[in-house]
Image (cartoon, protein in one colour):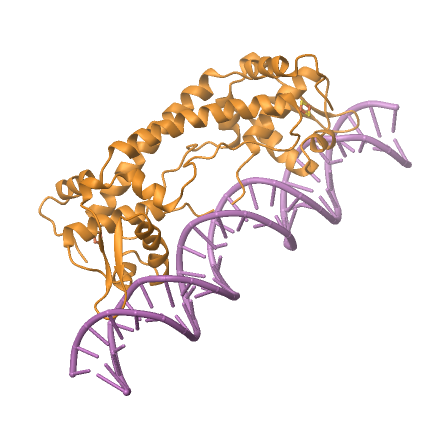
Amino acid sequence: MRTDGRLARMLHVLVHMELLGGRKTSERIALMLNTNPVVVRRSLGALRDRGIVESEGGRGGGWKLARSLDEITVLDVQRALNEGAILVAPISRDHPTCPVECAANSVLEEAYAAAELELMTKYTTMTLAQIAAIALANANGQAVTQ
Amino acid sequence: MRTDGRLARMLHVLVHMELLGGRKTSERIALMLNTNPVVVRRSLGALRDRGIVESEGGRGGGWKLARSLDEITVLDVQRALNEGAILVAPISRDHPTCPVECAANSVLEEAYAAAELELMTKYTTMTLAQIAAIALANANGQAVTQ
DNA sequence: TTTTCCGAAACAACAAATGTTACGATATCT
DNA sequence: AGATATCGTAACATTTGTTGTTTCGGAAAA
Ligand code: FES
Ligand code: FES
């Protein structure tokens, strides 16, 4: 299956909005993400529901940040896009009464819980402001485009 | 997408083979996994290539363990089924030259690398013998069936 | 020689994200 | 008021990997 790229895309867009400022239309953002305005609205709509961005319809409308980047963590964006667990343990449900299947599943779930905790720690401590700083350091004079 | 249940299924089957002993046909295993013999052959074939099980064709043939359970880690099974990384960071590739996209991707990749390391640690230290022990403890007198 | 196995190829089914089209609502400009 | 630019939303097609299924061939035992 195609890997879910919504989180990465939204991080990209949000930092872009801060660095290049101003209100951006779905079409412009779609251009920068090589995709369709509707796809952009779907994801940004979820962020709006969580108070990360604001949208305005009509002529001259578009999207803008609702908070500054240092008040947005990666976890905030992740949660806006998907309430549930980030990782899903690849368990089986072939024979639910079997103690062996349960034992194998419990081992996998424990391992995935530890991995998810690690992810959560990173997501919680990393703000979009830090991503912006990394981007500026990488750019090193080169313009941030579009 | 349907979650990949091959690892859990193979852990289940391998522990089953040890606890109930003897050689098992693909059809019998398929019954226990609520699936098709061909699906079983696909996954067990991968384990055979890694020396975890052995297969024998012809009448009276089937599958049996090639090593004892305490010589098989969860990681061995995972690697047999899939050489690559367990977790894949959900990065974007919309605008590869953009420093912002690269920065967002690098943050995600670092987080996923930490999570994968956690998984690897668990997978490496957990042997199938330990899973069997958990299963027996859970069963608590109740028979392990099929 | 018949039966019982695995091995492998060639599909169909399914699920989730993505891409696409289309239309309605709303705010701004002239 | 009318034209234009935007978002909001529904409906559908596309894509991709796992799983499920059918079918044949080959090998070993009875
Ligand atoms: S910051 Fe990457 S395209 Fe705008
Ligand atoms: S151990 Fe045989 S069905 Fe679970």
